[in-house]
Image (tube, rainbow, N blue to C red; front, side, top):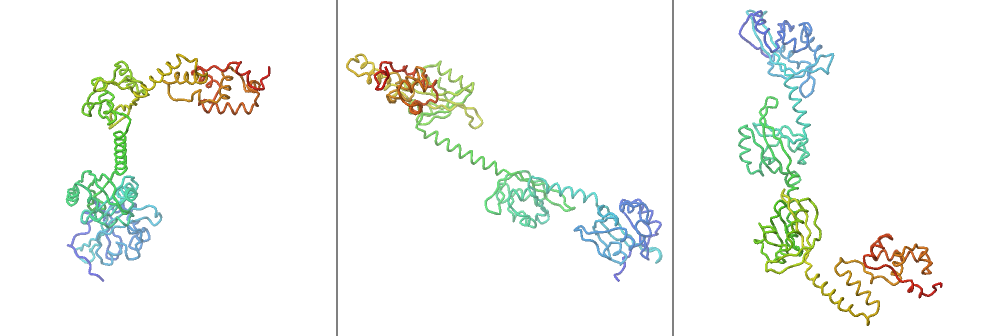
Length: 502
């Protein structure tokens, strides 16, 4: 038998008065192992009203209550704190879960310790079991555990005495790809939490001191290689009365990837803008001050980059028609696109360049800007003017020209200043006949009678005609023809075709 504990002799009645008002529960056992007395706190901790509800003795206590360790393993016979106390053992802070034998779903948490008090004689000796109700604390810790594990924000907890991690939540595992066993038991230094952090040494120093670690950017190494950009912060906390540090994280990797993608996009835009053969420039929207211009723009204008950047088109007197420039700028303020507006540029040396100007609002670095794109049509306009002059000269005397040549020259003159499109000269004679009859308002059946062709053949010719002139209905074909001065063929020409009924 282990040697019983000895304490200074005290009167039992005095002890009862002393312990009755304590917040800790106290149970007295007499020399025969019976529960002799319990204070009000002990009864409340067992959710009973009378001392007899505690079972009367150690065996009765076992029948009345079921005890389990915190790992959910039940206490075997002889392991109950009250039994160990009767066996002469010293019980020091044994934490157990306790339930009524009749309702195992009702659970409290008690921490037990022993106390032996000897009286004036052998019969007054008292064995005391002192109980502390830990239920509120453990319930709070369980709530913290559930909250920590369920929190989508990544989190880690390490002990302060050895810097080893004792908790990791699902958010951190999903963010990094670690497994739980890769984290638990390893140190902050082994994981490399602050190894890629500019202020890593400062963070580790605060960890040693148990002080708050303010948020800072860090690169957390990943198990598969590489790293992840995060913001990490540390807050001292207690877990099961043990000093610890709670680390929380904000994932910045998506932002880093977006920034890299944006930088690459800006680099591609800058290169394509700078190397584009088409003249282009960028200005602010609010005051139309140029902020950038490519080499082609500088070449056509004759200005250097330092001449353009920081100045407006008005200050440079870039456009000959000031009213037209004002009109374009107002359209851009109204968020209206500008497309192929004819403008005359006054170059630095005083000469002029004919341009088609397009412009559109864009946002660059959180600022509203305008991208200007120019097309130099000076040579084309000069060639068109020369061509028209030549045609007019030739057409002044057409007596020696055939009708087909005159038609072709007239068509060239009419369309020399228009945008490129299918021309009448590209149509076959049959397609011209079909177009003329469409302009005259004839149906497919009427055209079949007029030209002595089957309806399928007529439809095939119409489809070929539509494909060449870029339309898909009769009205559009008529408009296309009228815009080019074509109204149909004379009836006399049709009457000369073979097979024409008189």
